[in-house]
Image 1 (spheres, rainbow, N blue to C red):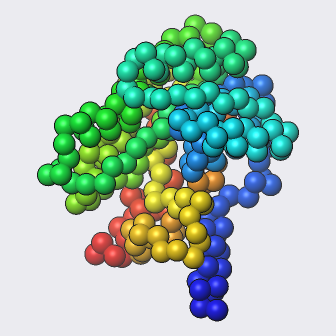
Image 2: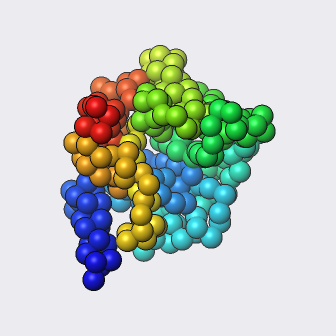
Length: 280
């Protein structure tokens, strides 16, 4: 019984900060989008939300079975989606190949790019070996850099486009673990501003989302989630749901954000903007 009550309480807290899909419209009708790392968690939620809003979406990731499942879910809801497998290892060739295939599958035009794919290895500075360092920077920074390099000029020459990067709250709040990951997300926030300056004048809007602690909906609601401890004393008081990040991505990708350039949108339950009582 106690387990059931705990499960219901955790589910209520997740739903409390989950936007209602009934509020969604068709703000992305006629647009095409590529969402990297969209076979699960935040990327999956963004792909589903974009399709719900009318976009034709390329779902991308390493796991074909999970990618096909996301595409099937979108199609069952009446949306349009394709799966393109990609191993974004940081090489220019891998990013260029994904950009080319996604554009081809979308009919020759890419309107929206979401640089979501990323990896988080556990560990500290002292325990990070050179291979891990290179791998994390390859996936988290080099891959989106070369993907943007591949698509932004075409967006500019084609009349415009939107790029949404994924940062993280840990880029601006120091923690005793995860320095490597935090530095990659800091790099993405810096690139957001640089790309906005570089491409914004040619019709390409570039912004970023900085998620807070997000609970993967694939986890057992009754299981203990260590991330909850990081949200104690914040205004939200609990970890967020991927749909909250997806709602922000829809906003930034839509014409509603036409005057938003080079911004980093915190969607973190107040984790960075407010001093949590647990930090005092």
